[in-house]
Length: 588
Image (cartoon, rainbow, N blue to C red; front, side):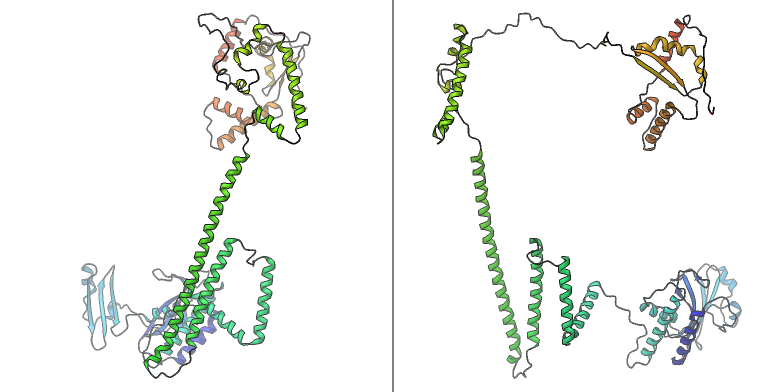
């Protein structure tokens, strides 16, 4: 404790220098909160502050601290002989019940004796064991050490440090502050207040109001000095220009309608506050004239009320006029919007295409100023069409020429051609009704898939078999039999095939790569939460994730079928001599 020892000794000397010694002294422990690492740090269970430095304090009943000592371990030179519990051998002269008798009683039973001369109370009761306590009746029930701790906590210093001695330093400063308050209360005339008044916790609004008042006072001091006020105005102007360059401040023209409404609302609020403030200033600035009667005393107040009422009526009248003007504008805008919508619909109707009939087209062409060229083109086209129809119709027989006369009554009537004529409307060609009793012969195309080979062009196919099993399988005659006799059933155009073996366990060929891809795909699917419970699920999963790999499942039926085939053709299967075998070993 060498870093704070000098400060503690100085404080104890000053505390004893200015104190007024009291006959009631309490010695108790006080905890200084600390959660860091230090060899002196203590842990006391059941205390409000369990971790920290233990400090022995001697204080009077008013809470004034005489001296203190930070506990650094066991010491035999303390010199204190005070205790609150009393041993049984120290109460022989008192007529308390014997501890053995109290021990036989039920729990919480007690016995007590009181000394009127010395005002000392002795109590003995049974708990887990026998406990005897002596106390002074005239002593205040409120612990002075706790009172001192409360005063320190009410005005606790808010500076925090990371060093081990910082909390002790602030604690000692708080102790000096508490003692100074005790001396102030003790020597103050009038009523004495034992407990320090708690510090009032300001709300957020109160803090802001306090800050605004301080800023207002500072600005008022600047305004009183012309030079400082000039410099302040220049700084504010430069600040405003910088914000305007950055785009933080917008003019009314640059604001959106929503921002303009918001700014206008703020302006109105501030203008109203300014009017109220000016009205109060006018009232406070009225010169004090000695009144001769009660009427004269009430005159300034009446004048103020009359002015306030007139101002209120004027503002209400202006607000009503603005409301009526805005309402009239809104009605005019709504009427214009309805007219615009009506004209839009009318324009849409005019833009719709009109039905052009041959007569309307002819009239349009004839009424146009440049009709000569258009009429010439139309007549030329009609003449050409007439000659072509004449060439087509003339070869017809007389019966076929009469078909038009049966259908159309007029020769050049437009209504007859559009089937709107009353005579032509019901005309039609005669036809024979369909008889369901007549049998009908029909032919149906059936899809047939056949392989067509071009005899002039021979297609050659090669088949490669890659395996990763031991090379000793080349002696298996059954495999060669199936390849020679049954492979052509699946590949008719095959010319020759090769059978390649790879050494197992080295991953050098395509079979090892295909197997690794299938295993990784299955592991990925299982890791993502999918369940592969059968071989069919594995085949479908690999087919989806790896579309370039075809998986064929061989069941028991296929194996039995091939075994039966081998049994029937067992006589045909014979071993054949190997002419040349070439084996390339690993590492040679």
